[in-house]
Structure formats: structure tokens, C-alpha cells
Image (cartoon, rainbow, N blue to C red):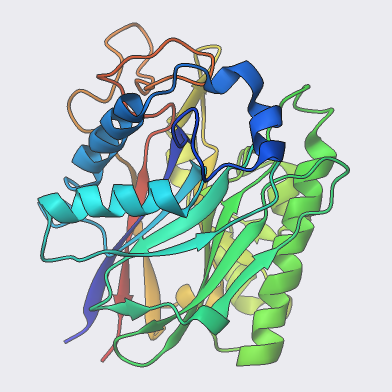
Length: 326
């Protein structure tokens, strides 16, 4: 029988270690300044508990098989999050793959995965630098090995923000898109042109923006991905975009910044590791959504913003189903 995997992505909104953490470098502490003030171990752990309560509900209460997350400060908080989910779902026993990036504020990308289904060999984890004058998040690539023995390349993305203005900062995301396209092509060159690739993340741009279309080589046209010789990516979010939905709200406008992109080796019905496009969804469980006029996510806050200990994140998770053949 084929194996079915539930895959999710979530920007968990500033999951930082405590204010006086011994695990924080002086450089990051200076960059954070007063924003980290009064961020106590109790608040950190409350936020982790809130996030874990959502993660444990995914996949019908069985938990995701693979989860990508961003805006996490270090491996310590990621491990505490994994432990909190494992307490709720002891059968999963999630393990962590984490990239300690050079971002100015110290925020990273990581994966939680079920070790019964996937392994993430240490020599198959790669951090790809996005060149910028001020340090920013890197792309995190893990070449997972499935329990059926296949290599599956997965990229976790958290592209440079729109801080300073969407147009003014667009060049940084263009660089990130070009970086993703380059290493997608390298996967074909190193592991073979049949290697399936998934890119997921908070791209801080919409599916139609140049960073994704012109630089990352993503498109809404499945046929263009299947028929092309260049390493294009099929963006699976266009139907959700057309419905006017979004994973993040800014000025009460819905933005679809969190996305799944797959290459041609996941886009056919005969692919050994196949994306199920109709399964893609934005996840909203009861209590996660504002009851105001606009259905925005309820943030936890902190880092200079008001704290709501009943909140979660300023982004909704997204999820999809992947199927692997015998």
C-alpha cells in the first residue's frame, strides 16, 4: 500500500528563548535590545504549550508526519516544542532538524519529523546563505530519507521581510528566490533529475510576485513544470489565492505568504513521491481566529508587542498530503 504523509508548515511568530538565556550570543542580545525584556521562561513555555496544542490537532489528531517551522530562536526552544507535542502524542516521538542561521535577530528554520517515517542524516542538512548586507535567514535544505528508502529534498524557507516597504525590500526576496532556484538545480545535478523536491515556507511575498515567479521559477501552470527542461516549481497555492484567502493579515488584507511549491518529480500521478494538490489547506482550529470583522489569526505577541497568553501566532499553519508509492 502507498504511504500517505501529512505535511505542514507554520511561522510560529517569534518563538524566543527567555530574556536572560545563556544560549543567546551577545550579538543577538544587542540586536534584540529591549524587545526581549520581560519575556520570562513562563511566557516562553506558555507559548510553546499553545503552539503544541495546535500541532497535536493536525492530521485528525494524529499530528503531522513532517512539520516545517520558522521564527524560532534556537534548537533549545524547538526541542522544547517537540517535547511538548510528544507529551500529547507519545506515539510520534518527533525528532528535530534545525539550522542555526546568521539572521540578525537570531531567528531560524527547523523541521519536526516522525523518525518512523523519515531520517535526516547530519551530512544531508544544508544551510544556503541569502547574500545581503545585513544578515538574514538562510534557506534550510534537508535531504530526507523515507522509510521506503527514497531521497526527498525539502527546503524550509523564511525569506527577508517587507520591513522598510514591500517594493524597497523586494530585491532581497529576489535574491532568496534565485538562491532557491540554484539549489533546486543542484539537487538535479547531484542526486539526479528524478529527485523529488518540496519547497515550503513563509516567502513574505505572494505567489504572483516576481521573487517567486521570475527568480524561484514557480508557476501556477502544472503543464509548464512537467514539460519544461528548467527546474521549475509548481506553486500549489493559486486556488486558495483565487478564493481570496490568506495565511497572514496586514492592515486587514489577507496575504498568502505561506506556500507549498513542488517540482516536476512530485507533480505527476505516477510520481513515487506525489503531491496531492487538492489537499492543500490553511488550518484554522476553533479559538485560533479573531472574532472581529476580519478572520485573522490570533497572535501570542511579545517581543515588544502586547502579549495574549491565549493566542498562538500571527500566521495560520498550512498543510497538505503527500503520497509515496510502495
